[in-house]
Image 1 (tube, rainbow, N blue to C red):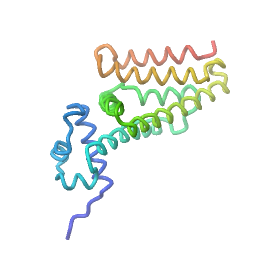
Image 2 (cartoon, rainbow, N blue to C red):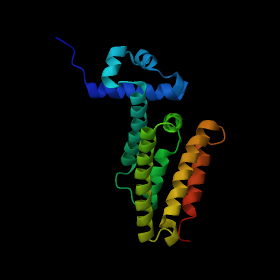
Image 3 (cartoon, rainbow, N blue to C red):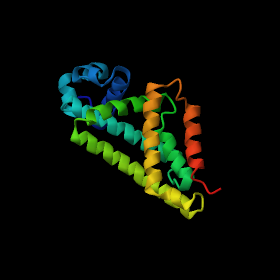
Image 4 (cartoon, rainbow, N blue to C red):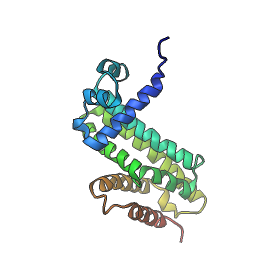
Length: 197
Protein backbone atom coordinates (compact mmCIF):
# COMPACT_ATOMS: atom_id res chain seq x y z
CA UNK A 1 0.00 0.00 0.00
CA UNK A 2 1.52 3.37 -0.98
CA UNK A 3 2.43 5.77 1.80
CA UNK A 4 -0.08 8.59 2.27
CA UNK A 5 1.68 11.96 2.33
CA UNK A 6 0.21 14.97 4.08
CA UNK A 7 1.39 17.58 1.58
CA UNK A 8 0.49 20.58 3.74
CA UNK A 9 2.48 19.16 6.64
CA UNK A 10 5.42 18.25 4.39
CA UNK A 11 5.43 21.76 2.91
CA UNK A 12 5.42 23.25 6.42
CA UNK A 13 8.36 21.03 7.40
CA UNK A 14 10.35 22.15 4.37
CA UNK A 15 9.59 25.80 5.11
CA UNK A 16 10.90 25.33 8.66
CA UNK A 17 14.10 23.88 7.21
CA UNK A 18 14.44 26.88 4.90
CA UNK A 19 14.12 29.49 7.61
CA UNK A 20 16.53 27.66 9.92
CA UNK A 21 19.06 27.36 7.08
CA UNK A 22 18.79 31.07 6.31
CA UNK A 23 19.24 31.96 9.96
CA UNK A 24 22.27 29.68 10.39
CA UNK A 25 24.02 29.94 7.03
CA UNK A 26 22.71 33.11 5.40
CA UNK A 27 20.51 33.53 2.40
CA UNK A 28 23.29 33.09 -0.18
CA UNK A 29 24.17 29.64 1.15
CA UNK A 30 20.62 28.38 0.80
CA UNK A 31 20.09 26.62 -2.52
CA UNK A 32 17.41 24.19 -3.64
CA UNK A 33 20.03 21.44 -3.43
CA UNK A 34 20.86 22.42 0.17
CA UNK A 35 17.17 22.63 1.09
CA UNK A 36 16.59 19.17 -0.39
CA UNK A 37 19.63 17.77 1.42
CA UNK A 38 18.70 19.09 4.87
CA UNK A 39 14.98 18.34 4.53
CA UNK A 40 15.60 14.80 3.26
CA UNK A 41 13.73 15.56 0.05
CA UNK A 42 14.82 14.84 -3.50
CA UNK A 43 15.26 17.79 -5.86
CA UNK A 44 12.29 16.54 -7.89
CA UNK A 45 10.06 16.27 -4.84
CA UNK A 46 11.16 19.70 -3.62
CA UNK A 47 10.02 21.25 -6.92
CA UNK A 48 6.54 19.88 -6.21
CA UNK A 49 6.36 22.24 -3.23
CA UNK A 50 8.58 25.09 -4.41
CA UNK A 51 9.46 25.60 -8.07
CA UNK A 52 12.58 27.60 -7.14
CA UNK A 53 14.59 29.08 -4.30
CA UNK A 54 12.69 32.37 -4.47
CA UNK A 55 9.38 30.63 -3.78
CA UNK A 56 10.91 28.84 -0.79
CA UNK A 57 12.32 32.09 0.62
CA UNK A 58 9.00 33.85 0.29
CA UNK A 59 7.23 30.95 2.00
CA UNK A 60 9.74 31.08 4.85
CA UNK A 61 9.10 34.81 5.38
CA UNK A 62 5.33 34.21 5.36
CA UNK A 63 5.82 31.37 7.86
CA UNK A 64 7.66 33.69 10.27
CA UNK A 65 4.95 36.34 10.00
CA UNK A 66 2.22 33.73 10.57
CA UNK A 67 4.12 32.38 13.58
CA UNK A 68 4.31 35.89 15.06
CA UNK A 69 0.58 36.42 14.58
CA UNK A 70 -0.24 32.99 16.03
CA UNK A 71 1.82 33.69 19.14
CA UNK A 72 0.11 37.04 19.63
CA UNK A 73 -3.31 35.37 19.29
CA UNK A 74 -2.33 32.63 21.73
CA UNK A 75 -1.09 35.21 24.23
CA UNK A 76 -4.26 37.31 23.91
CA UNK A 77 -6.82 36.65 21.19
CA UNK A 78 -8.87 39.69 22.29
CA UNK A 79 -6.10 42.27 22.34
CA UNK A 80 -7.31 45.69 23.46
CA UNK A 81 -5.79 49.05 24.28
CA UNK A 82 -2.23 49.48 25.52
CA UNK A 83 -2.09 45.97 26.95
CA UNK A 84 -3.04 44.51 23.60
CA UNK A 85 -0.53 46.73 21.82
CA UNK A 86 2.22 45.55 24.15
CA UNK A 87 1.28 41.91 23.46
CA UNK A 88 1.68 42.37 19.72
CA UNK A 89 5.01 44.16 20.18
CA UNK A 90 6.36 41.39 22.41
CA UNK A 91 5.77 38.80 19.71
CA UNK A 92 7.51 40.89 17.04
CA UNK A 93 10.49 41.68 19.26
CA UNK A 94 13.47 39.25 19.18
CA UNK A 95 13.31 38.43 22.88
CA UNK A 96 14.38 34.77 22.72
CA UNK A 97 16.26 32.42 20.40
CA UNK A 98 13.16 31.60 18.35
CA UNK A 99 12.32 35.24 17.66
CA UNK A 100 15.98 36.10 17.12
CA UNK A 101 16.18 33.38 14.46
CA UNK A 102 13.06 34.85 12.88
CA UNK A 103 14.68 38.30 12.89
CA UNK A 104 17.72 36.88 11.07
CA UNK A 105 15.47 35.48 8.38
CA UNK A 106 13.53 38.73 8.08
CA UNK A 107 16.73 40.74 7.65
CA UNK A 108 17.86 38.36 4.91
CA UNK A 109 14.44 38.67 3.28
CA UNK A 110 14.79 42.48 3.28
CA UNK A 111 18.02 42.11 1.31
CA UNK A 112 16.15 40.14 -1.36
CA UNK A 113 13.26 42.60 -1.30
CA UNK A 114 15.59 45.43 -2.33
CA UNK A 115 15.57 44.02 -5.87
CA UNK A 116 12.20 42.29 -5.92
CA UNK A 117 9.00 44.32 -6.22
CA UNK A 118 6.97 41.25 -5.23
CA UNK A 119 8.95 40.70 -2.02
CA UNK A 120 8.88 44.42 -1.24
CA UNK A 121 5.10 44.41 -1.68
CA UNK A 122 4.77 41.39 0.62
CA UNK A 123 6.84 43.13 3.30
CA UNK A 124 4.77 46.30 2.93
CA UNK A 125 1.54 44.29 3.31
CA UNK A 126 2.81 42.68 6.52
CA UNK A 127 3.85 46.04 7.91
CA UNK A 128 0.50 47.55 6.99
CA UNK A 129 -1.35 44.77 8.77
CA UNK A 130 0.65 45.36 11.95
CA UNK A 131 0.35 49.14 11.64
CA UNK A 132 -3.42 48.80 11.29
CA UNK A 133 -3.56 46.76 14.47
CA UNK A 134 -1.29 49.21 16.29
CA UNK A 135 -3.55 52.09 15.26
CA UNK A 136 -6.64 50.18 16.45
CA UNK A 137 -5.07 49.41 19.84
CA UNK A 138 -3.99 53.03 20.27
CA UNK A 139 -7.49 54.21 19.32
CA UNK A 140 -8.93 51.91 21.99
CA UNK A 141 -6.38 53.18 24.51
CA UNK A 142 -7.38 56.77 23.73
CA UNK A 143 -11.09 55.94 24.06
CA UNK A 144 -10.38 54.25 27.41
CA UNK A 145 -8.42 57.28 28.64
CA UNK A 146 -5.14 55.34 28.82
CA UNK A 147 -3.14 57.61 26.51
CA UNK A 148 -2.95 61.28 25.68
CA UNK A 149 -5.02 62.19 22.58
CA UNK A 150 -1.99 62.99 20.41
CA UNK A 151 -0.61 59.49 21.06
CA UNK A 152 -3.22 57.76 18.92
CA UNK A 153 -2.07 59.38 15.67
CA UNK A 154 -0.12 58.02 12.69
CA UNK A 155 3.17 59.46 13.95
CA UNK A 156 3.07 57.16 16.98
CA UNK A 157 2.33 54.13 14.81
CA UNK A 158 5.21 55.08 12.49
CA UNK A 159 7.59 55.53 15.43
CA UNK A 160 6.57 52.22 16.98
CA UNK A 161 6.92 50.32 13.71
CA UNK A 162 10.38 51.82 13.15
CA UNK A 163 11.34 51.05 16.75
CA UNK A 164 10.39 47.37 16.30
CA UNK A 165 12.26 47.05 12.99
CA UNK A 166 15.28 48.66 14.63
CA UNK A 167 15.21 46.17 17.50
CA UNK A 168 15.32 43.29 15.02
CA UNK A 169 18.44 44.73 13.40
CA UNK A 170 20.11 45.59 16.70
CA UNK A 171 19.39 42.19 18.25
CA UNK A 172 20.92 40.40 15.27
CA UNK A 173 23.92 42.72 14.89
CA UNK A 174 24.61 43.45 18.58
CA UNK A 175 23.04 40.65 20.64
CA UNK A 176 25.27 41.23 23.67
CA UNK A 177 23.95 44.77 23.91
CA UNK A 178 20.37 44.29 22.76
CA UNK A 179 19.35 41.84 25.45
CA UNK A 180 15.77 40.93 26.27
CA UNK A 181 15.73 43.07 29.46
CA UNK A 182 17.01 46.10 27.51
CA UNK A 183 14.42 45.58 24.78
CA UNK A 184 11.62 45.31 27.33
CA UNK A 185 12.83 48.44 29.12
CA UNK A 186 12.82 50.35 25.82
CA UNK A 187 9.31 49.18 24.95
CA UNK A 188 7.94 50.07 28.36
CA UNK A 189 9.61 53.50 28.21
CA UNK A 190 8.07 54.08 24.78
CA UNK A 191 4.58 53.14 25.99
CA UNK A 192 4.99 55.13 29.20
CA UNK A 193 5.50 58.32 27.19
CA UNK A 194 2.05 57.81 25.64
CA UNK A 195 0.15 57.40 28.89
CA UNK A 196 -2.04 59.96 30.59
CA UNK A 197 -0.07 61.18 33.60
